[in-house]
Image (cartoon, one colour):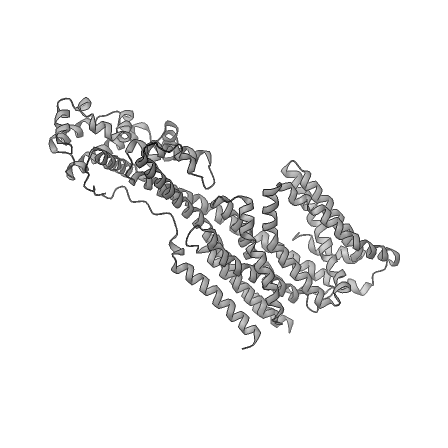
Length: 402
Length: 171
């Protein structure tokens, strides 16, 4: 998407937005079907690449089609930017729900009828373009992209990627929530994003909205980096801040990048490219940190858990039997945060030993929860810093506008 | 204040408040507890019966062996759990059976010393026990760590005549 958005926008300009959008949606739908039916990772990746190309053409062409529907280019930019921000917030929650309720394939298959349905009304525009068939040459000339707005978009998107992807990973892999459980938890973000878009409508200054949004995203990520315990409820306030912030900052920066620039599709392509490049860079930088940390924290948590067992009052034979079972669980679940419960099964029959064993299980699990939560802290903190640093290009963007 | 200033100011306040509250609630220290240095002496806490003595004997033995090997007590405890875990441990840390046996014997001696110091074992019993564990083979040494209670309780099988004295003196 990052690589194809701008060329796709040029293509949309060349063949006409109606035709481009219709073809883009058809390609997107076809590739989505291929993704859903793929039974191998390589075919899934290829189909996803094709889907990105179709999506890029459709989304950039849509920006050219919107003014006719909403009345003005400025209004079109606002609607288009808000749709992008809402989609970014909604994606992980919807994906989690579909994965758990149906299957991972359903994430792609459900896109097919939606894309085809969206293509139907565009066909009339495409037909008209085919009848007239001419694109005015002056419209093909493009100005330079808004550098600072796009740089800020990339940085903020990198930070938001941490909130969207790493939080889901923390919930599922770290705290052992089911995908549907995690999806329900992260719906806080799109709900807050909807509120943020209302809030943004009250403030005309795009720069103020962008700055406030970046600060809120960073604050939310800072909260995620400092979670005081492994409780789902504690992720809600940070998610509210991230949701509000992402809605404000993504739409404000996209509007800034598009403001007064023509053709809109090309500059819209630059914003999509910047956002997706930011997500890729964010994941490229944050994932190694997180995977390195999870291994370190796993070791620390297991040592802390073993210390809990060793220091407990249960008899040495039971202790070492537990240490053995815990060791076996760790072997079974190499490379991730282990679920330790089965190591304590069956519980002893003696009521005193049973209570002691249950207490041990709880304390050991607490150490693992601490390790899993802390493993994500550095990545969230770095993402918060990236979000704050985005204030620099946001501050510079006004000078360029002037 | 105009709307822009209110929005930015509100964002700053909300972000700082969240970070401040989470910091105050212990967010920066929510990490796995640090394990203790095995070379540091761990005081015995007034054991009242054979089970409690056995517990602390095991801990002291693991501490002593781990200290000698330069690993944590917890790593060693998991290593001794199964034959496979012991082999993995040996490979990872480059510790052969001889070195492991030497370390566990040293750990057992430390456990006897600690028990004697804590008043859990009388000197007359501690002496022969120490002499016994100094020469015990590896597999038996591991079994003593694992089954300290039976080792201490059935010491007569290892100690001969001293076993009677042990039974007499154990709390």
